[in-house]
Image (cartoon, rainbow, N blue to C red; front, side):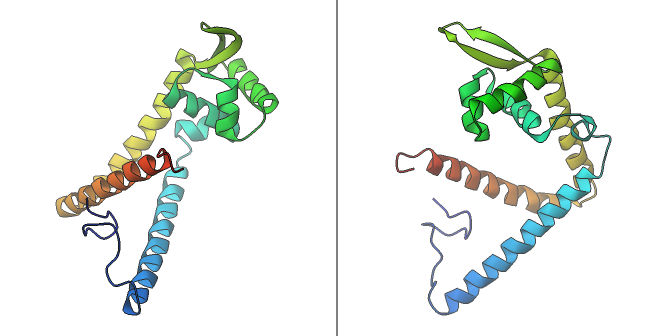
Amino acid sequence: MNDCRTGRPGGADVGTQGPGQDQADERDEIITRLAELQRGMGRFFARDRSLPIMASNLTMQQLKVVMFLSFHGSTSGQELARHLHVGLGTVTGIVDRVVAQGLATRREDPNDRRIRRVELTDAGKRLTAEIIDAGTTGYRRLLEHLDTETLRTMETVMRKIQQAMRDMAAEEHSPSH
């Protein structure tokens, strides 16, 4: 398997002693510049107040609940509390407000009546689809301004990033973690 960072087999930078430190410094500088470019893209897209995410009146915690439910489906309050790193009482209040807005419902778990499961309503599913679709639409509009060769290069890079994400997810779910 090739290391996504270097493109070389094995996963380690070759020659990381002495002159390799210069390479490590350069990598850190490039990563810093890329992170700043990513933040700039985020600011560019956030300026569009017509986006559904900007037009919603959800708090950040409420938005996190709605988006978590859109990706994971029905879940318990305990699972939401673990995901948000807050107590169950806090999650109950957040979910109460999301339910009051008509974006989620609570129901009994069919396997354990003591557990209440939270899931998106059709309105919640529409909102999350609009948020995701709006981001994709804006990203496509941006990409349309690039030439074909740049798009080819970007596709290659994005595939490497996607592989790095899969590798990171596998590491996070390995028994040693």
